[in-house]
Image 1 (tube, rainbow, N blue to C red):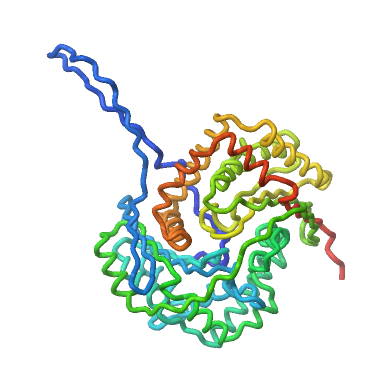
Image 2: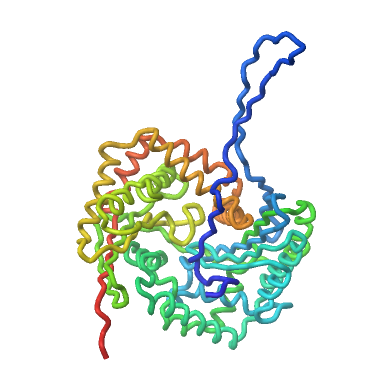
Length: 480
């Protein structure tokens, strides 16, 4: 993959050295007597909790474009992130991988920028850029010196107005995507495991369960008419949000957004398909044969509670308790005590984070393990960890530790990658909730989680009947 862009959401926001740089602070005002005066009556210390809040200026243009501004003068840079409310979850049937293919097409030229000139424009102005396709959106962003904000806005508006949709570009990008599928999935040990595989096994609704990277025959079947229709339908201002984060003057930024985006016509948006997932009532188990793998692997997945419910936030903390970090229960048992594996990975939404999706989701974990370890031995460890949550519960101290970890992760995102992490959440909340200010409520929602809610959530959602187990069976390569 090129460093300038990534076709699918496999990149993560880099961690900052030193971890959190923004935490809740406390200030203490004191009365200190001077040596020339008699001490005054002692005043009680005044402690004030100062919570960091992300600046959010949110409005909409007349054509429906959602705009979020968040000023941050920490460094003389600016992030422009454009999110379209179209991900691979609702791409056309018989066109698997089409949303991802179209992401490639967005770099092939527009009204005033020729093929690949968008990338060169950003790079020559000292910036970097990327794009990705996720479950519920496709995004494009640039990070530039602050004085180049107008350049980024002009370029993004230019391709929103009109894309260079030609048969040559389509044929070329079909080949690029097919090559990417072969390299990243088909010819890779553990290719697609479990981020691409598990949704197909665990879900029933086609929209959640199809191969979103794309079957090669479906990629070949995409026509120029398909591409034009897709662009006209989904790449419209009333189906998009733009987040601007960094060192800028708000009034100047608003004037630029108005100048370049207000004249773009909105589209008639189709009704959203039903992406709800039926309740799972029986455990599912599958085996994937992988002739390129040299060790067996196992992944588990549980269907998540609905987004933004109390149980959703409880699952965020359960993830921290069971799966995240060296102090997590599964790491401590599977790695430290049993020695079944060298690492355990997992989380909520493998193609992003627990905030930037809008529909059914899985909480997953996965590991590669020694061939001498039966898969059922790993499942037994998982069952024991879950049973402890249900039967013994957790104390407040355990929740407090989980809160520290999830707050650390959240604030790492907010300050990471020159502000892109902040732009990502602001644009997502604008698209999905029409309320980017939700970014400032997340920590408070996690703090509402009680030991009783953890127990209730575990009992309801961490049931074997709500679970899918996928194992990888390594096979010797076939001889010619």
